Image 1: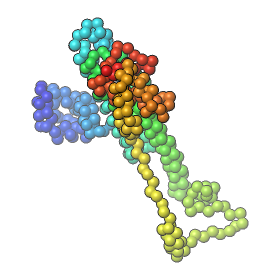
Image 2: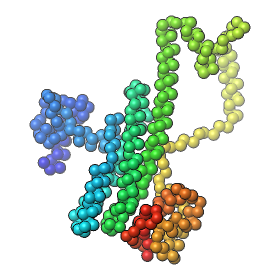
Image 3: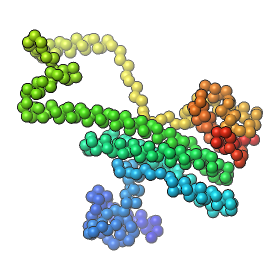
Image 4: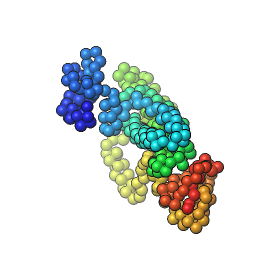
Length: 364
């Protein structure tokens, strides 16, 4: 079957496929839908193929809680094998295989980053699940995200160190995706912080719900003694609750006229108070290019043209434009600028690495 034939088949059976998608399984379908592998027969019912469901959910940005993030071990091992064969034979067949694997890994980075964003958004807005189940899903998701950290770092290191200088075409490919790969790796830390905050907030909400249920049961059971005792003991954290009187005083609430007077006075007072609206801080991290704007790249390029540095990364790291950065932040900023400059035609890679495990590039 050709791709065009498959599109026609899906269009022809659109309503049936949509019903199967919503109902999970149906009965009595045309045999051609089974032959095309769109459907799988289980007992006397037909279900949509999981591969088709994954495609649809990805396009519609629907991510299930049971998603398994996995790692990149299979592609990583294949890359190592293809690199060895390419170095031994210089055959373009292996070079093409390396480029395809790099592209596949980049697609995994891209899709996984988007899936995690959607999954966290669903966790924060899902009202259909019990809090205990929601907490369990959040904890499971957090464990899976932690598992990605080492895999992401290993692949990122392989791209930066082991594949650079292998071939000009591969270098161009790595340069084009380098900044995005770095961004996807850095996003993991933000996702971990975000889901940890969600777990803490949900645990607080679960405690509040239990307290509400405790009070509701007292009211339904007309247990006035226990209810009165609970309200008096919790007077500091419950609204409209009086403290226990030690002198047998009787407390009353103000009538409607008193409340109206109070509202009027409060309105007059508050109208004279200038309250600045709170700024909403978004959860999306700034793009790498915005951070690069802090540094004057043109000054660095100008000095590179004058000095013709033999190691561009070291030159950038020691440049006066980066003097305000320290320690790890200095290395990260220098590497971002290095990635940006490697797109220039004046850059020439050498077949060695510097003390920072970064491919040596010369400005010619």
